[in-house]
Image 1 (cartoon, rainbow, N blue to C red):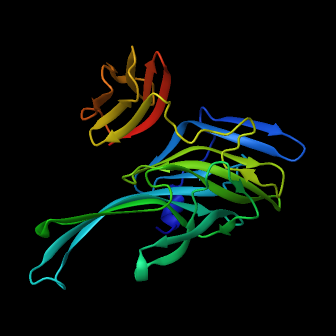
Image 2: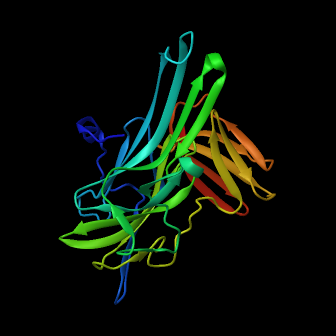
Length: 304
């Protein structure tokens, strides 16, 4: 996935998002500036993008870009008859603006004599320091990627996943320049297992130059890695939204609304696993709200 002029023209305006809350907490040695994106920013679709401006100076520091495409062809080199193949891949990439870098690590792929090592984006453990001691890189890097390959005639199919954030939530270590001074920060992101949606949840940086920051540090305590409340897990599965309650509740109600606030689905959750049919809902971004006697839950979803 290469950044080009077409991509640049499609990059979103990074005007402040509604619901963004910024908190700055200062001390003698540290000044953590934290921004919570509520609801999460969802980047989805081919060449959709988001510009990350860590310190709000109207100069973007990093960009996130998603790719979702498919292609196929016919191979005649390895088989006695023409064989058709199909490839579908979706994922997310991060790019740096000049002078800025991301924290990486050596990633080992393969086993035995076929094993190889390459430098890639790191999923920084919560509570780990981000600063001069990390390894840094300024090239474009893969955040998460899912590839499906099939050869129908042979009944063959395979799935390949790569990138540190595919199917999980993690922290990206960030290094950026402000007025010639170096600052360190983090961004918490997730790529869905199918690679189609990149969620950007929150981010922070230390306002004191050359001062390390702890992954998940907000200035008022660490942020939680898991979006879900303890009582519920949510995932999109084709034409369904699956809601799994991790405990029995006296009452739980799920409501799906459009971005404009229009209610499109509402139902009571009477079992520990419930599926909401979205086949009659137009593709787009929706808000899922779950209210129960054990708390509330809100998640931004993409219905395809």
